Length: 119
Length: 469
Image 1 (tube, helix red, strand yellow):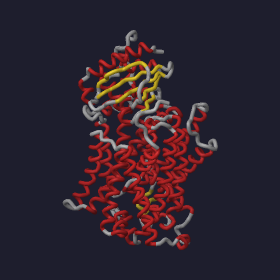
Image 2 (cartoon, rainbow over the protein chains, first blue to last red):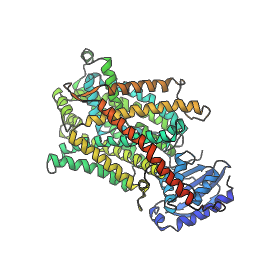
Image 3 (tube, one colour):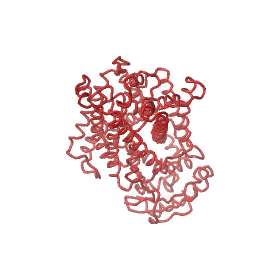
Image 4 (cartoon, rainbow over the protein chains, first blue to last red):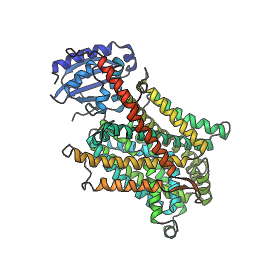
Protein backbone atom coordinates (compact mmCIF):
# COMPACT_ATOMS: atom_id res chain seq x y z
CA UNK A 1 0.00 0.00 0.00
CA UNK A 2 1.45 3.39 -1.01
CA UNK A 3 1.37 6.13 1.60
CA UNK A 4 -0.08 9.56 1.06
CA UNK A 5 3.43 11.01 1.02
CA UNK A 6 4.58 8.55 -1.67
CA UNK A 7 1.65 9.50 -3.88
CA UNK A 8 2.34 13.21 -3.39
CA UNK A 9 5.97 12.63 -4.42
CA UNK A 10 4.77 10.75 -7.48
CA UNK A 11 2.38 13.59 -8.31
CA UNK A 12 5.21 16.12 -8.04
CA UNK A 13 7.23 14.16 -10.60
CA UNK A 14 4.14 13.72 -12.78
CA UNK A 15 3.58 17.48 -12.76
CA UNK A 16 7.14 18.14 -13.97
CA UNK A 17 6.95 15.45 -16.67
CA UNK A 18 3.63 16.76 -17.98
CA UNK A 19 4.41 20.44 -17.87
CA UNK A 20 7.82 20.00 -19.52
CA UNK A 21 6.47 17.95 -22.41
CA UNK A 22 5.87 20.31 -25.33
CA UNK A 23 3.98 17.74 -27.40
CA UNK A 24 1.60 17.03 -24.55
CA UNK A 25 1.07 20.71 -23.80
CA UNK A 26 0.18 21.31 -27.45
CA UNK A 27 -2.28 18.44 -27.49
CA UNK A 28 -3.91 19.38 -24.19
CA UNK A 29 -3.87 23.13 -24.75
CA UNK A 30 -7.68 23.38 -24.41
CA UNK A 31 -7.94 20.87 -21.60
CA UNK A 32 -8.97 22.50 -18.33
CA UNK A 33 -10.13 20.02 -15.72
CA UNK A 34 -10.31 19.40 -12.01
CA UNK A 35 -9.37 15.84 -11.16
CA UNK A 36 -9.88 13.80 -8.03
CA UNK A 37 -7.83 10.68 -7.36
CA UNK A 38 -9.14 8.26 -4.77
CA UNK A 39 -7.07 5.43 -3.31
CA UNK A 40 -9.80 2.98 -2.34
CA UNK A 41 -7.60 0.80 -0.13
CA UNK A 42 -6.71 3.56 2.34
CA UNK A 43 -9.28 6.21 1.36
CA UNK A 44 -6.60 8.79 0.53
CA UNK A 45 -7.82 11.51 -1.80
CA UNK A 46 -5.96 13.97 -3.99
CA UNK A 47 -6.98 16.90 -6.13
CA UNK A 48 -5.21 18.01 -9.29
CA UNK A 49 -6.00 21.19 -11.17
CA UNK A 50 -5.19 21.28 -14.87
CA UNK A 51 -5.53 24.60 -16.69
CA UNK A 52 -5.03 24.59 -20.47
CA UNK A 53 -2.97 21.44 -20.27
CA UNK A 54 -0.74 22.67 -17.46
CA UNK A 55 -0.90 21.03 -14.04
CA UNK A 56 -1.07 24.17 -11.97
CA UNK A 57 -1.54 22.53 -8.59
CA UNK A 58 -2.12 19.30 -6.71
CA UNK A 59 -2.90 18.69 -3.10
CA UNK A 60 -3.96 16.12 -0.61
CA UNK A 61 -7.71 15.85 -0.04
CA UNK A 62 -10.68 16.19 -2.37
CA UNK A 63 -11.65 19.79 -2.97
CA UNK A 64 -14.05 21.35 -5.44
CA UNK A 65 -16.43 19.64 -7.84
CA UNK A 66 -14.38 17.45 -10.15
CA UNK A 67 -14.69 16.83 -13.86
CA UNK A 68 -12.89 13.50 -13.53
CA UNK A 69 -12.68 11.02 -10.66
CA UNK A 70 -10.09 8.23 -10.82
CA UNK A 71 -10.38 5.44 -8.28
CA UNK A 72 -7.87 2.63 -7.77
CA UNK A 73 -5.53 1.02 -5.27
CA UNK A 74 -2.88 3.40 -3.87
CA UNK A 75 -0.11 1.28 -5.39
CA UNK A 76 -1.58 1.56 -8.86
CA UNK A 77 -2.06 5.32 -8.54
CA UNK A 78 1.53 5.71 -7.40
CA UNK A 79 2.89 3.51 -10.22
CA UNK A 80 0.72 5.33 -12.73
CA UNK A 81 2.11 8.75 -11.74
CA UNK A 82 5.66 7.41 -11.95
CA UNK A 83 4.88 6.00 -15.42
CA UNK A 84 5.52 2.43 -14.29
CA UNK A 85 2.19 1.02 -15.38
CA UNK A 86 -0.05 1.20 -18.38
CA UNK A 87 -3.31 2.78 -17.15
CA UNK A 88 -5.24 1.46 -20.17
CA UNK A 89 -4.47 -2.12 -19.21
CA UNK A 90 -5.59 -1.59 -15.64
CA UNK A 91 -8.68 0.23 -16.85
CA UNK A 92 -9.58 -2.63 -19.18
CA UNK A 93 -9.10 -5.05 -16.27
CA UNK A 94 -11.47 -2.95 -14.14
CA UNK A 95 -8.68 -2.17 -11.66
CA UNK A 96 -8.69 1.54 -12.41
CA UNK A 97 -12.15 3.06 -12.49
CA UNK A 98 -12.85 6.46 -13.97
CA UNK A 99 -15.90 8.67 -13.75
CA UNK A 100 -15.69 11.13 -16.63
CA UNK A 101 -16.71 11.61 -20.21
CA UNK A 102 -15.26 9.07 -22.67
CA UNK A 103 -13.17 11.82 -24.21
CA UNK A 104 -11.62 12.74 -20.87
CA UNK A 105 -10.89 9.08 -20.11
CA UNK A 106 -8.94 8.87 -23.35
CA UNK A 107 -7.13 12.16 -22.80
CA UNK A 108 -6.08 10.99 -19.36
CA UNK A 109 -4.60 7.85 -20.85
CA UNK A 110 -3.03 9.91 -23.63
CA UNK A 111 -0.96 11.79 -21.04
CA UNK A 112 0.80 8.59 -19.97
CA UNK A 113 1.18 7.41 -23.53
CA UNK A 114 2.91 10.61 -24.60
CA UNK A 115 5.17 11.01 -21.60
CA UNK A 116 6.10 7.35 -21.35
CA UNK A 117 5.39 5.67 -24.72
CA UNK A 118 6.82 2.35 -23.50
CA UNK A 119 4.76 2.14 -20.32
CA UNK B 1 -20.33 8.84 -4.48
CA UNK B 2 -18.46 11.95 -5.67
CA UNK B 3 -20.53 14.14 -7.94
CA UNK B 4 -19.10 15.27 -11.27
CA UNK B 5 -19.37 18.81 -12.52
CA UNK B 6 -21.07 17.66 -15.71
CA UNK B 7 -23.29 14.58 -15.67
CA UNK B 8 -25.67 13.06 -18.15
CA UNK B 9 -29.37 13.24 -17.42
CA UNK B 10 -31.91 10.49 -18.11
CA UNK B 11 -33.23 12.30 -21.18
CA UNK B 12 -29.75 12.28 -22.76
CA UNK B 13 -29.25 8.59 -21.95
CA UNK B 14 -32.58 7.87 -23.67
CA UNK B 15 -31.79 10.10 -26.66
CA UNK B 16 -28.34 8.55 -27.09
CA UNK B 17 -29.67 4.99 -26.91
CA UNK B 18 -32.59 5.71 -29.26
CA UNK B 19 -30.46 7.92 -31.53
CA UNK B 20 -27.96 5.15 -32.14
CA UNK B 21 -30.76 2.84 -33.27
CA UNK B 22 -32.47 5.27 -35.65
CA UNK B 23 -30.74 5.14 -39.03
CA UNK B 24 -31.64 5.42 -42.72
CA UNK B 25 -31.50 1.62 -43.08
CA UNK B 26 -34.35 1.38 -40.54
CA UNK B 27 -36.79 2.81 -43.09
CA UNK B 28 -35.99 0.02 -45.50
CA UNK B 29 -36.02 -2.61 -42.76
CA UNK B 30 -39.43 -1.30 -41.70
CA UNK B 31 -40.74 -1.83 -45.22
CA UNK B 32 -39.18 -5.30 -45.30
CA UNK B 33 -41.04 -6.19 -42.09
CA UNK B 34 -44.27 -4.84 -43.55
CA UNK B 35 -43.96 -7.08 -46.58
CA UNK B 36 -42.87 -10.26 -44.75
CA UNK B 37 -46.06 -9.97 -42.70
CA UNK B 38 -49.05 -7.88 -43.72
CA UNK B 39 -48.31 -4.17 -43.81
CA UNK B 40 -51.31 -3.14 -41.71
CA UNK B 41 -50.29 -5.63 -39.01
CA UNK B 42 -46.52 -5.08 -39.14
CA UNK B 43 -46.75 -3.37 -35.76
CA UNK B 44 -47.30 -6.79 -34.19
CA UNK B 45 -43.83 -7.97 -35.25
CA UNK B 46 -42.31 -4.64 -34.19
CA UNK B 47 -43.94 -5.03 -30.77
CA UNK B 48 -42.64 -8.61 -30.52
CA UNK B 49 -39.12 -7.50 -31.53
CA UNK B 50 -39.32 -4.60 -29.07
CA UNK B 51 -40.40 -6.93 -26.28
CA UNK B 52 -37.51 -9.29 -27.02
CA UNK B 53 -35.07 -6.39 -27.04
CA UNK B 54 -36.55 -5.23 -23.73
CA UNK B 55 -35.56 -8.58 -22.20
CA UNK B 56 -32.08 -8.12 -23.55
CA UNK B 57 -31.95 -4.51 -22.32
CA UNK B 58 -32.64 -5.81 -18.81
CA UNK B 59 -29.63 -8.13 -19.08
CA UNK B 60 -27.44 -5.24 -20.31
CA UNK B 61 -28.73 -3.11 -17.43
CA UNK B 62 -27.58 -5.66 -14.86
CA UNK B 63 -24.19 -5.98 -16.58
CA UNK B 64 -23.77 -2.20 -16.68
CA UNK B 65 -24.67 -2.04 -13.00
CA UNK B 66 -21.86 -4.54 -12.35
CA UNK B 67 -19.30 -2.94 -14.68
CA UNK B 68 -20.19 0.72 -15.20
CA UNK B 69 -17.33 1.42 -17.57
CA UNK B 70 -16.66 2.23 -21.20
CA UNK B 71 -14.76 -1.06 -21.20
CA UNK B 72 -17.91 -2.79 -19.90
CA UNK B 73 -18.40 -5.24 -22.77
CA UNK B 74 -14.84 -6.54 -22.43
CA UNK B 75 -15.04 -6.60 -18.65
CA UNK B 76 -18.23 -8.59 -18.26
CA UNK B 77 -17.27 -11.18 -20.87
CA UNK B 78 -13.79 -11.43 -19.36
CA UNK B 79 -15.09 -11.93 -15.83
CA UNK B 80 -17.76 -14.35 -16.98
CA UNK B 81 -15.40 -16.39 -19.17
CA UNK B 82 -11.82 -15.33 -19.84
CA UNK B 83 -9.80 -12.54 -21.40
CA UNK B 84 -9.35 -14.52 -24.62
CA UNK B 85 -13.08 -15.03 -25.02
CA UNK B 86 -13.61 -11.32 -24.32
CA UNK B 87 -11.11 -10.35 -27.03
CA UNK B 88 -12.60 -12.77 -29.58
CA UNK B 89 -16.20 -11.67 -29.00
CA UNK B 90 -15.32 -7.99 -28.56
CA UNK B 91 -13.44 -7.82 -31.86
CA UNK B 92 -16.07 -9.88 -33.66
CA UNK B 93 -18.85 -7.60 -32.44
CA UNK B 94 -17.09 -4.30 -33.00
CA UNK B 95 -15.46 -4.92 -36.39
CA UNK B 96 -18.53 -6.61 -37.84
CA UNK B 97 -20.64 -3.80 -36.41
CA UNK B 98 -18.70 -1.27 -38.46
CA UNK B 99 -19.84 -3.18 -41.55
CA UNK B 100 -23.27 -1.77 -40.79
CA UNK B 101 -21.86 1.58 -41.74
CA UNK B 102 -21.44 0.12 -45.21
CA UNK B 103 -25.18 -0.42 -45.53
CA UNK B 104 -25.88 2.97 -44.02
CA UNK B 105 -23.62 4.95 -46.35
CA UNK B 106 -24.90 2.93 -49.31
CA UNK B 107 -28.51 3.81 -48.49
CA UNK B 108 -27.75 7.45 -47.75
CA UNK B 109 -25.95 7.73 -51.07
CA UNK B 110 -29.14 6.39 -52.71
CA UNK B 111 -31.14 9.08 -50.97
CA UNK B 112 -28.79 11.91 -51.94
CA UNK B 113 -28.32 10.67 -55.52
CA UNK B 114 -32.09 10.66 -55.99
CA UNK B 115 -32.48 14.23 -54.77
CA UNK B 116 -29.32 16.16 -55.61
CA UNK B 117 -27.90 15.93 -59.14
CA UNK B 118 -24.19 16.79 -59.37
CA UNK B 119 -22.79 15.14 -62.52
CA UNK B 120 -24.69 11.96 -63.27
CA UNK B 121 -26.25 9.08 -61.32
CA UNK B 122 -23.17 6.83 -61.41
CA UNK B 123 -20.67 9.51 -60.42
CA UNK B 124 -23.04 10.96 -57.82
CA UNK B 125 -23.51 7.55 -56.28
CA UNK B 126 -19.78 7.04 -55.71
CA UNK B 127 -19.31 10.64 -54.68
CA UNK B 128 -21.97 10.62 -51.95
CA UNK B 129 -20.90 7.22 -50.73
CA UNK B 130 -17.31 8.30 -50.12
CA UNK B 131 -18.24 11.83 -49.08
CA UNK B 132 -20.46 10.49 -46.32
CA UNK B 133 -17.87 8.03 -44.97
CA UNK B 134 -15.02 10.51 -45.03
CA UNK B 135 -17.09 13.41 -43.74
CA UNK B 136 -17.89 11.45 -40.58
CA UNK B 137 -14.28 10.24 -40.43
CA UNK B 138 -13.13 13.87 -40.60
CA UNK B 139 -15.48 14.90 -37.77
CA UNK B 140 -14.00 12.09 -35.66
CA UNK B 141 -10.45 12.96 -36.69
CA UNK B 142 -10.97 16.55 -35.59
CA UNK B 143 -12.29 15.26 -32.28
CA UNK B 144 -15.62 17.07 -32.73
CA UNK B 145 -18.16 15.66 -30.31
CA UNK B 146 -21.93 15.82 -30.39
CA UNK B 147 -22.93 17.33 -27.06
CA UNK B 148 -25.71 15.91 -24.93
CA UNK B 149 -28.08 18.75 -25.71
CA UNK B 150 -27.46 18.42 -29.48
CA UNK B 151 -28.09 14.67 -29.24
CA UNK B 152 -31.33 15.34 -27.33
CA UNK B 153 -32.60 17.82 -29.92
CA UNK B 154 -31.71 15.64 -32.92
CA UNK B 155 -33.17 12.41 -31.53
CA UNK B 156 -36.38 13.87 -30.16
CA UNK B 157 -36.97 15.86 -33.36
CA UNK B 158 -36.52 12.68 -35.43
CA UNK B 159 -38.91 10.73 -33.19
CA UNK B 160 -41.54 13.49 -33.16
CA UNK B 161 -41.28 13.80 -36.93
CA UNK B 162 -41.66 10.05 -37.52
CA UNK B 163 -44.60 9.76 -35.12
CA UNK B 164 -46.29 12.84 -36.62
CA UNK B 165 -46.04 11.76 -40.27
CA UNK B 166 -47.03 8.19 -39.38
CA UNK B 167 -50.21 9.31 -37.62
CA UNK B 168 -50.99 11.64 -40.51
CA UNK B 169 -50.42 8.88 -43.07
CA UNK B 170 -52.59 6.39 -41.15
CA UNK B 171 -55.40 8.90 -40.69
CA UNK B 172 -55.19 9.97 -44.35
CA UNK B 173 -54.97 6.53 -45.95
CA UNK B 174 -56.84 4.44 -43.39
CA UNK B 175 -55.90 0.98 -42.11
CA UNK B 176 -58.15 -2.01 -42.69
CA UNK B 177 -57.01 -4.27 -39.87
CA UNK B 178 -59.89 -6.76 -40.25
CA UNK B 179 -59.13 -7.41 -43.92
CA UNK B 180 -55.43 -7.73 -43.11
CA UNK B 181 -56.08 -10.49 -40.55
CA UNK B 182 -57.56 -12.60 -43.38
CA UNK B 183 -54.39 -12.39 -45.45
CA UNK B 184 -52.43 -15.58 -46.20
CA UNK B 185 -49.32 -13.81 -44.93
CA UNK B 186 -50.73 -13.28 -41.45
CA UNK B 187 -49.25 -16.41 -39.85
CA UNK B 188 -47.34 -17.01 -36.63
CA UNK B 189 -44.31 -18.06 -38.63
CA UNK B 190 -44.33 -14.76 -40.56
CA UNK B 191 -44.83 -12.75 -37.36
CA UNK B 192 -41.71 -14.35 -35.89
CA UNK B 193 -39.74 -14.06 -39.12
CA UNK B 194 -40.61 -10.36 -39.38
CA UNK B 195 -39.74 -9.92 -35.69
CA UNK B 196 -36.28 -11.37 -36.44
CA UNK B 197 -35.77 -8.64 -39.04
CA UNK B 198 -37.40 -6.25 -36.56
CA UNK B 199 -34.49 -6.76 -34.17
CA UNK B 200 -32.48 -4.80 -36.72
CA UNK B 201 -34.56 -1.70 -35.91
CA UNK B 202 -33.06 -1.66 -32.43
CA UNK B 203 -29.44 -2.24 -33.45
CA UNK B 204 -27.10 -0.20 -31.29
CA UNK B 205 -29.36 0.72 -28.36
CA UNK B 206 -26.91 -1.03 -26.01
CA UNK B 207 -24.06 1.24 -27.13
CA UNK B 208 -25.23 3.71 -24.52
CA UNK B 209 -23.71 1.49 -21.81
CA UNK B 210 -20.21 3.06 -22.14
CA UNK B 211 -21.73 6.34 -20.95
CA UNK B 212 -22.21 4.89 -17.45
CA UNK B 213 -19.11 6.75 -16.30
CA UNK B 214 -20.79 10.05 -17.13
CA UNK B 215 -23.88 9.51 -14.98
CA UNK B 216 -24.53 10.16 -11.31
CA UNK B 217 -26.43 6.93 -10.89
CA UNK B 218 -25.56 3.81 -12.90
CA UNK B 219 -29.21 2.77 -12.79
CA UNK B 220 -29.91 5.64 -15.20
CA UNK B 221 -28.29 3.66 -18.02
CA UNK B 222 -30.57 0.68 -17.49
CA UNK B 223 -33.62 2.86 -17.11
CA UNK B 224 -32.63 4.87 -20.19
CA UNK B 225 -32.23 1.72 -22.30
CA UNK B 226 -35.69 0.48 -21.27
CA UNK B 227 -37.26 3.85 -22.06
CA UNK B 228 -35.45 3.99 -25.40
CA UNK B 229 -36.72 0.54 -26.37
CA UNK B 230 -40.26 1.55 -25.39
CA UNK B 231 -40.12 4.79 -27.39
CA UNK B 232 -38.52 3.08 -30.40
CA UNK B 233 -41.12 0.29 -30.32
CA UNK B 234 -44.01 2.78 -30.40
CA UNK B 235 -42.33 4.93 -33.07
CA UNK B 236 -41.43 2.03 -35.36
CA UNK B 237 -44.84 0.37 -34.87
CA UNK B 238 -46.55 3.50 -36.11
CA UNK B 239 -44.00 4.18 -38.82
CA UNK B 240 -44.01 0.72 -40.45
CA UNK B 241 -47.78 0.86 -40.77
CA UNK B 242 -47.79 4.52 -41.83
CA UNK B 243 -45.09 3.86 -44.42
CA UNK B 244 -46.86 0.81 -45.81
CA UNK B 245 -50.23 2.48 -46.24
CA UNK B 246 -48.57 5.65 -47.50
CA UNK B 247 -47.01 3.85 -50.49
CA UNK B 248 -48.81 2.24 -53.41
CA UNK B 249 -48.26 -1.50 -54.01
CA UNK B 250 -46.38 -0.60 -57.17
CA UNK B 251 -44.07 1.72 -55.23
CA UNK B 252 -43.41 -0.96 -52.59
CA UNK B 253 -42.55 -3.47 -55.33
CA UNK B 254 -40.25 -0.96 -56.99
CA UNK B 255 -38.49 0.03 -53.78
CA UNK B 256 -37.82 -3.52 -52.65
CA UNK B 257 -36.34 -4.50 -55.99
CA UNK B 258 -34.52 -1.24 -56.68
CA UNK B 259 -30.75 -0.97 -56.41
CA UNK B 260 -31.33 2.54 -55.04
CA UNK B 261 -34.09 2.11 -52.46
CA UNK B 262 -35.58 5.31 -51.04
CA UNK B 263 -38.99 4.25 -49.66
CA UNK B 264 -39.17 7.02 -47.08
CA UNK B 265 -38.47 9.73 -49.68
CA UNK B 266 -41.23 8.40 -51.93
CA UNK B 267 -43.47 8.19 -48.86
CA UNK B 268 -42.70 11.81 -47.96
CA UNK B 269 -43.43 12.97 -51.52
CA UNK B 270 -46.74 11.05 -51.54
CA UNK B 271 -47.82 12.79 -48.36
CA UNK B 272 -46.55 16.34 -48.79
CA UNK B 273 -45.13 16.62 -52.31
CA UNK B 274 -41.47 17.61 -52.95
CA UNK B 275 -41.26 19.35 -49.56
CA UNK B 276 -42.12 16.08 -47.81
CA UNK B 277 -39.36 14.31 -49.75
CA UNK B 278 -36.92 17.03 -48.75
CA UNK B 279 -37.84 16.68 -45.08
CA UNK B 280 -37.13 12.97 -45.24
CA UNK B 281 -33.79 13.64 -46.94
CA UNK B 282 -32.87 15.86 -43.99
CA UNK B 283 -34.05 13.20 -41.53
CA UNK B 284 -31.97 10.61 -43.38
CA UNK B 285 -28.85 12.74 -43.19
CA UNK B 286 -29.45 13.42 -39.51
CA UNK B 287 -30.14 9.77 -38.69
CA UNK B 288 -27.18 8.44 -40.68
CA UNK B 289 -24.66 11.00 -39.50
CA UNK B 290 -25.58 10.61 -35.81
CA UNK B 291 -25.63 6.80 -35.82
CA UNK B 292 -22.50 6.48 -37.99
CA UNK B 293 -20.68 9.13 -35.97
CA UNK B 294 -21.45 7.34 -32.69
CA UNK B 295 -20.51 4.02 -34.27
CA UNK B 296 -17.15 5.27 -35.51
CA UNK B 297 -16.48 7.13 -32.25
CA UNK B 298 -17.08 4.02 -30.15
CA UNK B 299 -15.28 1.57 -32.43
CA UNK B 300 -12.22 3.78 -32.91
CA UNK B 301 -11.92 4.25 -29.13
CA UNK B 302 -12.31 0.51 -28.71
CA UNK B 303 -9.50 -0.11 -31.24
CA UNK B 304 -7.33 2.46 -29.46
CA UNK B 305 -7.90 0.75 -26.10
CA UNK B 306 -7.22 -2.68 -27.62
CA UNK B 307 -3.94 -1.40 -29.05
CA UNK B 308 -2.97 0.10 -25.68
CA UNK B 309 -3.76 -3.30 -24.15
CA UNK B 310 -1.40 -4.94 -26.71
CA UNK B 311 -4.19 -6.81 -28.44
CA UNK B 312 -4.00 -4.87 -31.70
CA UNK B 313 -0.78 -3.53 -33.30
CA UNK B 314 0.54 -0.47 -31.44
CA UNK B 315 0.03 1.73 -34.49
CA UNK B 316 -3.71 1.78 -33.68
CA UNK B 317 -2.97 3.70 -30.48
CA UNK B 318 -1.38 6.63 -32.33
CA UNK B 319 -2.98 9.92 -31.35
CA UNK B 320 -3.21 13.08 -33.37
CA UNK B 321 -0.77 15.62 -31.89
CA UNK B 322 -3.34 18.41 -31.84
CA UNK B 323 -6.82 16.86 -31.75
CA UNK B 324 -5.92 13.91 -29.50
CA UNK B 325 -8.02 11.61 -31.66
CA UNK B 326 -6.90 8.04 -32.46
CA UNK B 327 -6.40 8.89 -36.12
CA UNK B 328 -4.98 5.54 -37.28
CA UNK B 329 -7.96 3.67 -35.82
CA UNK B 330 -10.35 6.19 -37.38
CA UNK B 331 -8.65 5.95 -40.76
CA UNK B 332 -8.56 2.13 -40.73
CA UNK B 333 -12.21 1.76 -39.72
CA UNK B 334 -13.30 4.41 -42.22
CA UNK B 335 -11.49 2.61 -45.03
CA UNK B 336 -13.08 -0.65 -43.89
CA UNK B 337 -16.55 0.86 -44.00
CA UNK B 338 -15.82 2.48 -47.38
CA UNK B 339 -14.80 -0.95 -48.77
CA UNK B 340 -18.01 -2.50 -47.41
CA UNK B 341 -20.05 0.33 -48.93
CA UNK B 342 -18.31 -0.15 -52.26
CA UNK B 343 -18.95 -3.90 -52.19
CA UNK B 344 -22.60 -3.21 -51.39
CA UNK B 345 -22.78 -0.78 -54.29
CA UNK B 346 -21.20 -3.26 -56.70
CA UNK B 347 -23.31 -6.25 -55.60
CA UNK B 348 -26.50 -4.41 -54.62
CA UNK B 349 -26.91 -6.88 -51.74
CA UNK B 350 -27.71 -4.40 -48.98
CA UNK B 351 -30.16 -6.84 -47.40
CA UNK B 352 -27.16 -9.09 -46.75
CA UNK B 353 -25.82 -6.48 -44.31
CA UNK B 354 -29.23 -5.93 -42.74
CA UNK B 355 -29.61 -9.66 -42.05
CA UNK B 356 -26.03 -9.78 -40.77
CA UNK B 357 -26.64 -6.88 -38.38
CA UNK B 358 -29.82 -8.50 -37.06
CA UNK B 359 -27.93 -11.78 -36.56
CA UNK B 360 -25.05 -9.99 -34.86
CA UNK B 361 -27.44 -8.32 -32.43
CA UNK B 362 -29.13 -11.67 -31.66
CA UNK B 363 -25.68 -13.11 -30.99
CA UNK B 364 -24.58 -10.34 -28.62
CA UNK B 365 -27.91 -10.47 -26.75
CA UNK B 366 -27.35 -14.19 -26.19
CA UNK B 367 -23.81 -13.47 -24.95
CA UNK B 368 -25.14 -10.79 -22.56
CA UNK B 369 -27.77 -13.14 -21.11
CA UNK B 370 -25.22 -15.95 -20.68
CA UNK B 371 -22.88 -13.48 -18.93
CA UNK B 372 -25.65 -12.47 -16.50
CA UNK B 373 -26.10 -16.11 -15.49
CA UNK B 374 -22.36 -16.86 -15.28
CA UNK B 375 -21.61 -13.74 -13.24
CA UNK B 376 -24.44 -14.42 -10.81
CA UNK B 377 -22.99 -17.88 -10.25
CA UNK B 378 -19.40 -16.63 -9.93
CA UNK B 379 -20.06 -13.47 -7.93
CA UNK B 380 -23.42 -13.92 -6.18
CA UNK B 381 -22.62 -11.34 -3.50
CA UNK B 382 -21.18 -8.62 -5.73
CA UNK B 383 -23.19 -5.41 -5.48
CA UNK B 384 -25.60 -4.77 -8.34
CA UNK B 385 -27.55 -1.53 -8.38
CA UNK B 386 -29.93 -3.24 -10.79
CA UNK B 387 -30.78 -6.94 -10.88
CA UNK B 388 -33.04 -8.54 -13.49
CA UNK B 389 -36.14 -9.75 -11.58
CA UNK B 390 -37.51 -13.33 -11.50
CA UNK B 391 -34.17 -15.04 -10.95
CA UNK B 392 -32.74 -16.75 -14.03
CA UNK B 393 -36.05 -16.72 -15.92
CA UNK B 394 -35.48 -13.60 -18.03
CA UNK B 395 -31.84 -14.39 -19.03
CA UNK B 396 -32.87 -17.94 -19.98
CA UNK B 397 -35.87 -16.70 -21.98
CA UNK B 398 -33.56 -14.17 -23.68
CA UNK B 399 -31.14 -16.94 -24.67
CA UNK B 400 -33.91 -19.21 -25.97
CA UNK B 401 -35.70 -16.42 -27.86
CA UNK B 402 -32.63 -14.98 -29.57
CA UNK B 403 -31.10 -18.39 -30.29
CA UNK B 404 -34.43 -19.29 -31.91
CA UNK B 405 -34.48 -16.07 -33.93
CA UNK B 406 -30.88 -16.60 -34.98
CA UNK B 407 -31.52 -20.16 -36.14
CA UNK B 408 -34.74 -19.06 -37.83
CA UNK B 409 -32.93 -16.21 -39.57
CA UNK B 410 -30.08 -18.39 -40.84
CA UNK B 411 -32.32 -21.19 -42.03
CA UNK B 412 -34.49 -18.84 -44.05
CA UNK B 413 -33.91 -16.94 -47.30
CA UNK B 414 -34.19 -13.23 -48.08
CA UNK B 415 -36.84 -12.56 -50.70
CA UNK B 416 -38.05 -9.60 -52.71
CA UNK B 417 -41.63 -8.36 -52.87
CA UNK B 418 -42.65 -11.07 -55.35
CA UNK B 419 -41.20 -13.78 -53.11
CA UNK B 420 -38.20 -14.37 -55.36
CA UNK B 421 -35.21 -15.56 -53.34
CA UNK B 422 -32.45 -12.94 -53.28
CA UNK B 423 -30.03 -15.11 -51.32
CA UNK B 424 -30.06 -17.91 -48.79
CA UNK B 425 -29.35 -16.53 -45.32
CA UNK B 426 -26.92 -19.33 -44.52
CA UNK B 427 -24.43 -17.37 -46.62
CA UNK B 428 -24.64 -14.68 -43.95
CA UNK B 429 -24.02 -17.36 -41.29
CA UNK B 430 -20.99 -18.61 -43.25
CA UNK B 431 -19.57 -15.10 -43.62
CA UNK B 432 -20.00 -14.46 -39.90
CA UNK B 433 -18.57 -17.85 -38.96
CA UNK B 434 -15.57 -17.13 -41.19
CA UNK B 435 -14.94 -13.83 -39.45
CA UNK B 436 -15.42 -15.42 -36.03
CA UNK B 437 -12.78 -18.02 -36.94
CA UNK B 438 -10.50 -15.20 -38.01
CA UNK B 439 -10.85 -13.33 -34.69
CA UNK B 440 -10.34 -16.61 -32.82
CA UNK B 441 -7.21 -17.48 -34.80
CA UNK B 442 -5.92 -13.91 -34.35
CA UNK B 443 -6.51 -14.03 -30.59
CA UNK B 444 -4.86 -17.41 -30.19
CA UNK B 445 -1.83 -16.83 -32.41
CA UNK B 446 -1.08 -13.10 -32.86
CA UNK B 447 -2.23 -11.62 -29.55
CA UNK B 448 0.18 -13.77 -27.45
CA UNK B 449 3.07 -12.43 -29.59
CA UNK B 450 2.04 -8.81 -28.93
CA UNK B 451 1.59 -9.54 -25.24
CA UNK B 452 4.99 -11.23 -25.01
CA UNK B 453 6.74 -8.34 -26.74
CA UNK B 454 4.99 -5.87 -24.44
CA UNK B 455 6.07 -7.90 -21.43
CA UNK B 456 9.69 -7.88 -22.69
CA UNK B 457 9.55 -4.10 -23.08
CA UNK B 458 8.19 -3.74 -19.56
CA UNK B 459 10.92 -5.99 -18.16
CA UNK B 460 13.62 -4.08 -20.01
CA UNK B 461 12.35 -0.71 -18.85
CA UNK B 462 13.88 0.70 -15.68
CA UNK B 463 11.22 1.50 -13.10
CA UNK B 464 11.10 5.19 -12.28
CA UNK B 465 9.48 4.86 -8.88
CA UNK B 466 12.15 5.20 -6.19
CA UNK B 467 13.14 1.87 -4.70
CA UNK B 468 11.63 -0.16 -7.58
CA UNK B 469 14.47 0.02 -10.10
